[in-house]
Every structure is written in structure tokens, then in C-alpha cells.
Length: 448
Image (cartoon, rainbow, N blue to C red; front, side, top):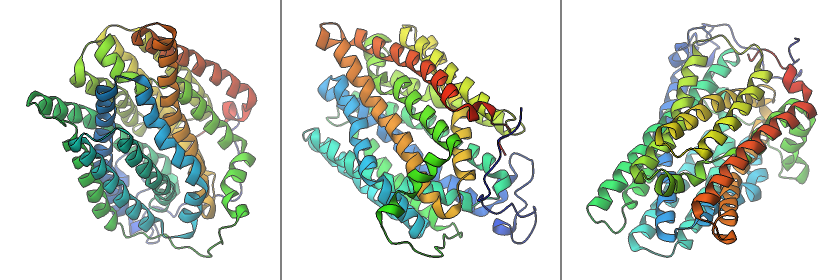
């Protein structure tokens, strides 16, 4: 099998390890999986990401728990995803333009401050027991800030490391997401359970406050990063400039194919939005068990991170990605039918392990195949695909569960099972369609 050829406008080739011109002057291009941590900027960046994501994962779990407790509605859970997806649809193009024409580091920091204020607002709403629509308003504000922050953040990472080790940097970068996804929900579940046990009227409020503090801590870590993004020539915000990211993605069959695969697979196969229903009404494990269920997928992903970091780069990256998404769909079906807590954990663990393969391939190729002057706008498009699949997927899952459950005269449990199982089947069908429409993905070779 021949490896896919890379376009001519790739970023400059890596500087030899140990060369003073290399980022921070460190020999980060070593094959040792931990050599990248000699890079001071990358280490501060990664630590900041870990702290911030811990808070965000706690926040996400607490919001879903509180909304389901206060409304008892699957649709209320689905609206969380929809509320955070709308800003992405509205502001993706401006966010990409800002990331390419302003200091990316400063954009990340300022948008993180807005996220902290949004989380603090939810804490106040929870304490006051204000109507839930105020929570959705704060989620909308946070989603807007996240849209701008994600575009700048994704485009900033390639400047911190040597191109030769960028796949490894991506793998470590997603590892902190998975680690936070393990610790965060479990910690949030423990805090909520403890507060509820002490008869608190707003047991989730401390979790929201913690997320605000961790967001501010992230700004402190990023301020220690010395690397700066310098804009050579600023482009005016014209329609043509705004559409650059979409044009580039559309012209690259590989990028368009892998983004489409991820978007539709997660849109159909995501079961996480319905975990509160499974925890409370199917598996009967309460908020503590919900935290464990939400930690199962990232636990599988984290294991896969260490396996990939101790192995050579994927030699058949395209096939590996297609196979991984297929297994994801099968495991989702298994989880949907499960009424045994430990089997449910195993299925979610499997979903997480194979999902990491897809994530590493997608993020690496999107950044490697994009020139630096377009990275912000292409990253914004990438984030749009990701957010659409995650947030709209949550809305889709909640809506299907509501329709095939109470709306049709069945129980909420029946609706949730139908939603998850049908989504897993749809994921497998999407893999077959993508493999036929974009054969370049099947033929893509070494990931490096």
C-alpha cells in the first residue's frame, strides 16, 4: 500500500534535534515517548490544559445531573448540546479569522476568562434556584467563548513542538482530556452526593465554582508559555477570507473525509448524553455510579494513549481509523442493550479506547496538512465538525429517546435504549459510506 502524498505547502521541515533553533532549544525529536516534556512551553501548556479540563469535566457532569434532577426530561439534557452548538454555528468563521490574525495565546487567555465568568454565573443560578433557562443562557455565553478559544488553541499547539513529534504531542494533548474525564466526573459526583447528603439545596453549585477557579488557573499556566504567535500580514475580515477554512477543507479529500466520518459517527453513536437516564433508571447506581460511567470512556482512551506513545507511528492510519470507528459502533450497541453495570462500563471503556485512535489520526492530519497561515480557520472548521457531532449528537440522542419513549406512550427507559442502539447501527453504516466515498482514507499510510 502506498502512503498518501503530502501537499507542497506543509509547514517547514523539523529542525534537527538539539539544534538551537528548535523550539526552546531542546532535543524533543527523540523517539523516547517522554522526551517531548523537555520542551518547557509544551509542558506548561499541557499542565494548564489538565487543570482547565478537570474543571470543565466536573462542570459538564454537574450541569447534566442538575438539569435532569430539576426537569426529569431527556429533552432538557439534549438542549445542553444544542445550546452550546448554536454559538459554534454562528461564530466559527469569525473565530478562525481571529485566530489567524491576532495573537493566539492572548485569544486563548481572554476567552478562558469569559468561560470562568460563565461558570460562576451558573453557580449563582444554582444557589438561587433560578429558572433553568438562565443556565442555558450561561451555557450559550460559554459556548461562544469556547468557539473562539478552541480555534486559537488548536492552531497554537503546532508552534510549540517540532513537526516530527507533533503526532506524539497530539496524543499527549488528548491524554489530559481523557485523564480529566476520568477524575472530573467522579469527583463531581462525589461532591454532589456529599452535598446532597448534607441536605444542600444546591449540591452542584460548588462544582461550578471550582470550574471557574480552574479556568483562571489555566490562564496562569499559559502566561508562562514563552512562544508567541506573530502575524506576518493581517487580512481584512472579508467574506472570502472567512471562507478560506471551508475552501481548504473541501479541496482536501482526506481532511473532508475524516471530518465527515467523525461528525456523523459521533452524531449517531454518542450515548453519553443519556448516561443520567442509564445511571438512575436502568442501572440504578445514582450520581456516584454516573460519575463512574462517565469516566469509563476516558479510561479506555487513556490506556490507548500510553499504548500508542510506546509504539511507532501508525503504519496504516486510514484503515486503523475506519476499523476503530466500526468497533466504536459495535460497543455502543452493546452498551445500549446492557442492564449490568460492569458490562456497561466495559462497553464504554472499549468505546473510549478505539475513539482515541480516531482522535489522534484526525487531529494530526488536520494540522499537518494545513499551512500555518490557514491553521486558525481550518481549526475553526474542524472544531465546528467536532462540536456539531458532540453537541448536536446529544440533542439527537435526547430527542430520539423522548420521541420513542414518553411521546409514543413508552417508558423513558425504552426510548433511551432505542436511541443508543440505533445510533450504534448508524455509526457502522457511516463507516461503510465514508470508505466508499473517500477511498483516499483507506489508502493513507504512515502517520508521521
